[in-house]
Image (cartoon, rainbow, N blue to C red; front, top):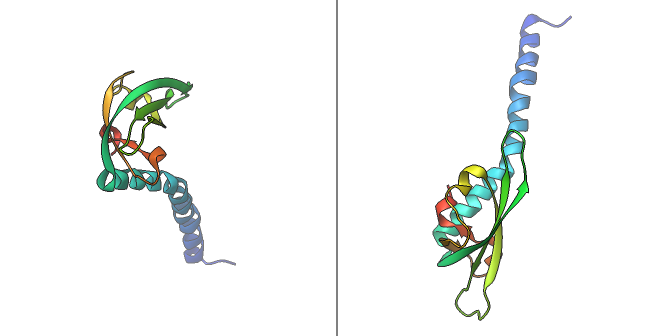
Length: 121
């Protein structure tokens, strides 16, 4: 028969530690993406881009709609403009408009991983 102390330890582990570990692994990809975007903002090349398309990609449930924002810019050493796409929620979309010029940062090696300065947290 298990002692009351071992039952409490088991219950604490099952109800406290296990959900915390699961929660950590669910949030880790999101945290890594935020860290990468901040790194691009700090160490990347600055440029001005133009929002050329805003498409609703998900009508949403509780979280509301999601939008695909396409931004076009011409980095130095390129003759043709480069386009990249980011997904944002309705709250971030209040800061963007179609054909609006926005400050961006990008890495020269990975132009498609550019970020919109104003939306990096």
